[in-house]
Amino acid sequence: MPLLSLLLLLASCASANKYTVGDAQGWNPGVNYTLWVDKHRPFHLGDWLVFYYQSGMADVVQVDETAYNKCDSSHPISNYSKGRSYAFELNQTKRFYFICSFGYCYQGMKVSVLVHPLPPPSPPPSGDKSAASITPFTSFSAVSVAVATVLRLLF
Ligand SMILES: *[C@@H]1O[C@H](CO)[C@@H](O)[C@H](O)[C@H]1NC(C)=O
Ligand SMILES: *[C@@H]1O[C@H](CO)[C@@H](O)[C@H](O)[C@H]1NC(C)=O
Ligand SMILES: *[C@@H]1O[C@H](CO)[C@@H](O)[C@H](O)[C@H]1NC(C)=O
Image (cartoon, rainbow, N blue to C red; front, side, top):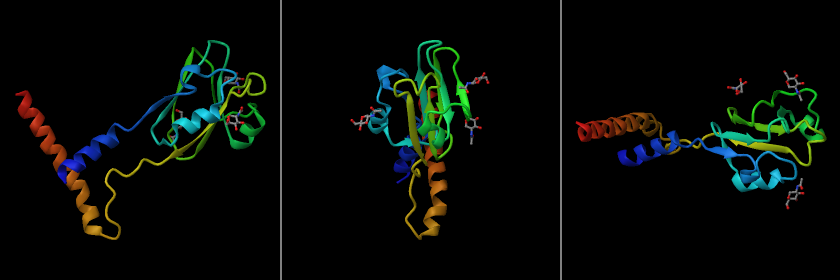
């Protein structure tokens, strides 16, 4: 059980993913980003979207749902156009909307992703409060054992 906790703990620490929007096609006109989202979802809190574009040829504008549907970049939540890439952390559990302000979403340059909460590291059995309150201690002692083991191997 301690080993399982440790594995789950490590898994949750390492769970933030970086997604290249459009994969090899990047953030460019003529890419179907709905298909891209379908391929990579679910997205979780702490994951990153990385937009790669040709310098001066595109921007990344975060908008709300209404503006997204209308390809309206006149009231952006945020906008970015410097350099050739932009990394955005999905730091809230909600739906994020991004468009390119060049033209009318410039041949489909719009993407929306729904961000889910991180799955709990070790789901406590429902209705068992004592087990739930013990879990953090179990994880902590598992880490202590792991650290002690590593130290023993090093010295
Ligand atoms: C993307 O592909 C899906 C599935 O083939 C299709 O339903 C959708 O209309 C396409 N979207 C665009 C913007 O072409
Ligand atoms: C993006 O921000 C810059 C500087 O704040 C502004 O000049 C530009 O008009 C904005 N672009 C869009 C599409 O909102
Ligand atoms: C999420 O990240 C954006 C951009 O870095 C930042 O402006 C915003 O305050 C962050 N929101 C939260 C809830 O941390």
